[in-house]
Length: 163
Length: 471
Picture 1 (cartoon, rainbow over the protein chains, first blue to last red):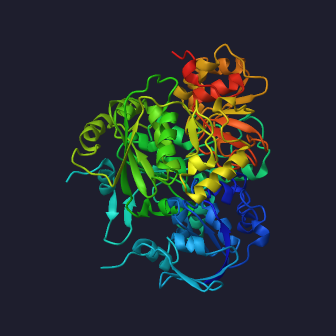
Picture 2: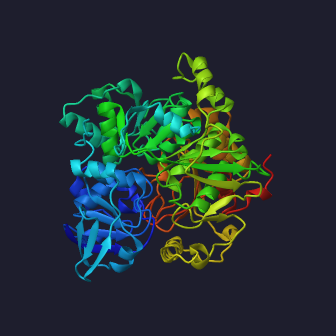
Picture 3: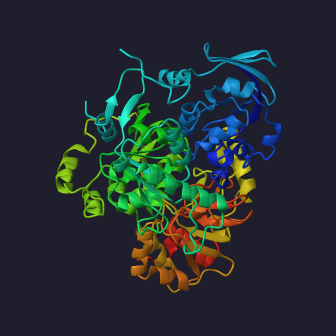
């Protein structure tokens, strides 16, 4: 999966800046997407392209349980978030609805990847290739449980292994 | 080896659990509100599914209800639609709804316990991160997203990864329990463990500093567990818990026999171990005031704002975060907290809008006036809290001091209804999140206790409430 990076070099990006509360009444996902990241980066909507990835620091998606947050990012075209760590509800919401991939990275990847870099994520090898800089980093593998929900295509498609 | 309270509740709710698979957990109570439920009901309709246990599902409207005169129509059309949608969904699927005109309407996390719906040892979910509040009663209470709301509506179960356990011991006694409150304890905890300190864990709060607290205060503690990143917060039920829930509108008929079994079963065994432990000594803690844009950016009321270097301990992102926070908050390092002037005061939210919160705040306000530079409001957590407060004459105390006295709802905690800050306005708020724009685009939030908020309203700036006579 290839895409370009939009980097927010900070920790604790919360769901209130990902999609401010006033838009939680919006039911049209395309319209919701026009307000993604509005609380942090008013230019986000004009610069994000289909297939982009967001790179950020620790505790991405902290705060409210609003599933509107991964939905707004997903409908903006964002396919994955690469972060040093994630808040749990955001993480689960991202995979439950198959909105986007939450990918935990290490400090090398965080430091090495810059705004605009072209990245190739290979989940089967747990590898992130930086095509722009010709570097390769490890991603933290999904837990077996989360991997199965992702592979199934979301919570409602998941069925436990049969004995 | 012994088991923790969390493990006991978890194990008693397993439907299916296999190695390296999520566990399917049974849900005893599902609380529903207007914001995170519409897509879930749409999903049920699309797949021709029913709500499996409408009798275990309870709904109210709280996030975007107006808190002004309820005899008037709702002007914000999108809010009106969302409220109407919940009414339709509850009618179509046979779910009990406390609507905008119900005497039981209120913030979902305030009404659950008040109605006796929240019970010890049960599993409770809601499409809202502050569901952790119900953990104060020894319930495993989890905030979930809308896909999971749909899953619970359809099946009364959830696929969950088993969380780790985190013991937070609160030791000692507060010198002045009217000035140093549960809010100050939980803000101190988050300041110490950080906003991600509890990630992936269920916290059990233990120790003398916790058992000393009333139920209203314990709810404030558990409410903000999510601000420390935890999946849930728990406090083992005791006599205070059992007394609180007795004779409520929805208290089960066999309550006393339930209490007998809870007394035996709902505690952490003495030889149980936790994955992680933190201890806070509260003998000398001060009232807390947040200065930044997450709840971990908090200091004592008699301190000055730290420099980004002091705050960050050498972590670049923390430093940059503190710099951005100070810029957003329009504050400088070294400024004394008591020198910060405020424009607005909000006493409300699922963190601090219960009867005891209003009683404590009213003691500061009694016979005083809100500073001329400040506009202040009280938004009771539920219509029942409002009624009880009015029976005690608290509304008069607040109104005479020039506070606005409103109807129940989430209100200015998250800026979904008309109660919002204007850009640049600075607010002393009893809510739970000081994120950028949380209370309105460009608004600046300082998290404090109800007594600290009340004192700030009267003085126009933060004051150390330990200096006031509060007894």
